[in-house]
Image 1 (cartoon, rainbow, N blue to C red):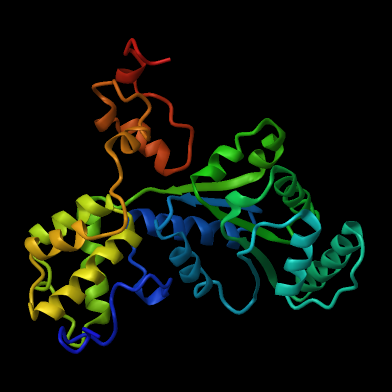
Image 2 (cartoon, rainbow, N blue to C red):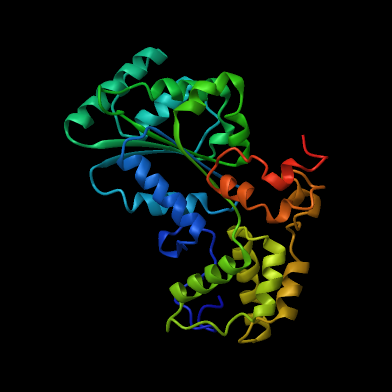
Length: 318
């Protein structure tokens, strides 16, 4: 609707996971690099987590374009399944003709297919989106699936992508063996303000007819967009797309603070409450939690978020 008015080839802030709009922020590029490394080195299990709208699916779609021809992909998006249903979904997504039967018979047919692919020099990759919905028993079955291997290689690479609840689920005692099998675990944190600025600029340039769109949003407008989105790409898209639509209606060539504020105030999406943000820190009372380099370095790598020395000495920490 507003594309011609702003000299755009297409809408820059659609929420479709289009790889050409992939913005290689340090976080998203590292997530992509870790996925490629784990798959190419046949590491077995990979876990990528992040808040709703953090860009996990876009990373995944970008990954698919970089894997090459010698890869067979099974993509599972319906995760409200039991173990047998999951096996059937995998076989169907791989276009494997199979005879319905017990879980053991289905697993045997999948194993035969994986061996044939290995002999042909092809890798098989299973990607499960929204994996936080899988029950502990089904996750345990996936661990058993990862046992399909030769003396030197895994027959199938498994990527679990999900919301932060997946991280918590993997801490369950009954999933300890699965947790130990995870070769790479990366958590996608929201964009910083500077990264968000780059993200907006990248999407505008990608969709632009002439490549130069730096004038379209004022710095003050982007500040409002950041306060609203807290760096979550999907919410950035929401704010910027609606601001462009409003700008078109008002015939404004530049999105300023007033217009962005109006869009945000009229949004049906609630801003994140301050206490929800604070809950991501180790201790909300600690005077050092905002600048704890150790904590956030570990957190970005999906490692245990051990307190830094300053936090460890704080009386309220346990």
